[in-house]
Image (tube, rainbow, N blue to C red; front, side, top):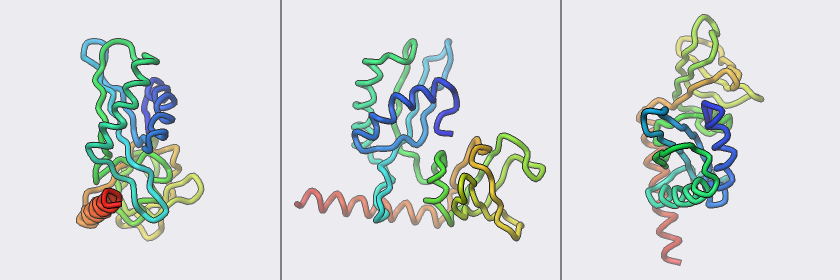
Length: 187
């Protein structure tokens, strides 16, 4: 889910080490557009989540830093034919969930899942994330008594639902980041 196409996956192989070297993780990468339209390489990234719960966010300076690092490698390797625009951003509060660990990190928050096949007669599900069991995502679905287990490999799209609780978490993350930045500049 971090990349949709074979070209996306090749770019992830090239750019993951670059992002990690400058202190970030790529959440999602998409190369969009075709022959007629100028292509757009969209990278969503974040700081790794630390054991103390800090990290996991990106500010404008972080985006610029990652953009410069990625641009150098893209210019040297030239893996994309033709012109393209590079966009680097944070995943945002109602972020996509693209890695198995994301479903653990956001346990207790509401999410929407879309599968590549029918399960229980449908492809789309909405519920509260209940963590991960092996390679399966646990989710408490609306109107169901038991927690459903969905194989991660079946999920083609997953996203957090914007709720007051999620907004509060986002505000707390930003506040912790600002406090951490202030402490570092005063030292």
